[in-house]
Image (cartoon, rainbow, N blue to C red; front, top):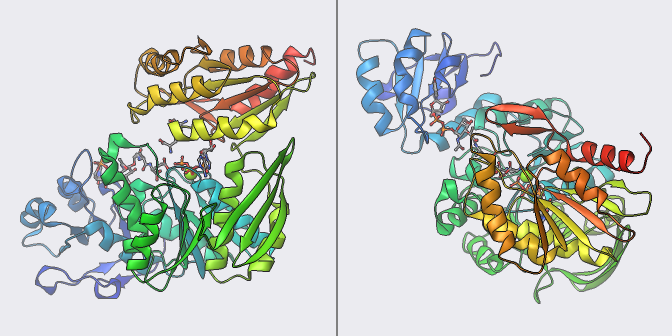
Length: 500
Ligand SMILES: CC(=O)N[C@H]1[C@@H](OP(=O)(O)OP(=O)(O)OC[C@H]2O[C@@H](n3ccc(=O)[nH]c3=O)[C@H](O)[C@@H]2O)O[C@H](CO)[C@@H](O)[C@@H]1O[C@H](C)C(=O)N[C@@H](C)C(=O)N[C@H](CCC(=O)O)C(=O)O
Ligand SMILES: Nc1ncnc2c1ncn2[C@@H]1O[C@H](COP(=O)(O)OP(=O)(O)OP(=O)(O)O)[C@@H](O)[C@H]1O
Ligand SMILES: N[C@H](CCC[C@H](N)C(=O)O)C(=O)O
Ligand SMILES: [Mg+2]
């Protein structure tokens, strides 16, 4: 809810109520429990319940106006009849709310870019922010890791609800932030959370399996992601598309059909920002690329081939949003790892490395294990688990990818939430055991799994702790127990090497 003293009419917010009724609005909310006198309550169709079923509670709390859809109006209209409460009925109340919230909270940072895709959104958004910062601009990234950069703020969602999002963007702008890169999650796009945001450019990383619990089909999941180009990014915006992904050309065609300029990125012929070659070493990689016919070489202090793809996509987004290309490329050697993404968390006395990474989809597990291989002379030991209350069908695929590409796999718990952890592990184990060539162990306790994995490390080996990345909690039931993979890994290494 807004907590500010300002007031608006419905007309100021671009809303027309039934019977042209007016109302003085002092706050907006999507939750009946937050309604106070003067509040506009957006009663939205939810996945569990329709917000309009809380109309009586909103009225009891003094609601001034209700925004809902035709379905919600069946409940709300009789309840507000004969009162002063204004009823606004919208075809797509989530989209209307997003526009209303943008008008209510006012300015956002002047230059904004968005990124969607199954994997790599946080990485790309962080790299955009880092590029702008190195160019001397006041910049933030907004997403899974909260608002980071010139102004910081925690967030509960990757793409927050429109009221939170617009409030945060206005606060950032008022605190001097001029540039922002934000993640567009598929849930966020489907629920129109960022429809009020004005983007200069929008990017697409890749499309693989995740979130089928919510979207149900690959088609629906893809369509949700495409909302970034078909609805949010305007025709005058620039679409920056990873052409190496099998869906890349289709995304580029969708953007072109909307009249957007397209910057293709990747190894593919025809990419305007084209990755020509990569050479890996123990601390990063040399990258050779072509920008509109001129060849560049840069050093990236980032582990993993996929990070170069993310960096080039970020560079494309920043260029697409108006920056000078040469100035952008000059910042790339200064980019640092995003917390919890291929982060070197600890090193054993014998030189073996422990990496913490946020791979929580089958494709991410595969990508990260393939990416780590050129940096490792010995064995790769992978710790993997899958989240509860999330897409169940990805579990065996994650186990299978780990067993196919690592030398030893330890299956453990990762946020079981309200599910039985043993049942989740069983599904991951089934996938892993389907790949006969690898040693597979099941150790439910995550700290013990990390200790056992670190204990296996011989000179030249590497341990990959996948799934939790930057997270600092293990969600068991509805409790969040403090757990930080990087912290646990470094303690385990110190203990095994006799230093504590
Ligand atoms: C599936 C999903 O996305 N649900 C989100 C959605 O809830 P919903 O609309 O389905 O809620 P509901 O329980 O059916 O309630 C319907 C409406 O009634 C209202 N209500 C409810 C109770 C009450 O007493 N009074 C009242 O007014 C609610 O505020 C809601 O507007 O809208 C809520 C308010 O914004 C979100 O908190 C909630 O996120 C849930 C908690 C969630 O876990 N979301 C995750 C899956 C998510 O969004 N993740 C993405 C992707 C992450 C990634 O990148 O992988 C993200 O962007 O974070
Ligand atoms: N370009 C990429 N292609 C494939 N996998 C990637 C890519 N970039 C990152 N990953 C993998 O995905 C993990 C998550 O990366 P990141 O947090 O940037 O993605 P995200 O899309 O923001 O995820 P979320 O959906 O949770 O917000 C990384 O830790 C890595 O394992
Ligand atoms: N944004 C993702 C993060 C998953 C991270 C992993 N640790 C898990 O809990 O599955 C999700 O909510 O599905
Ligand atoms: Mg993210």
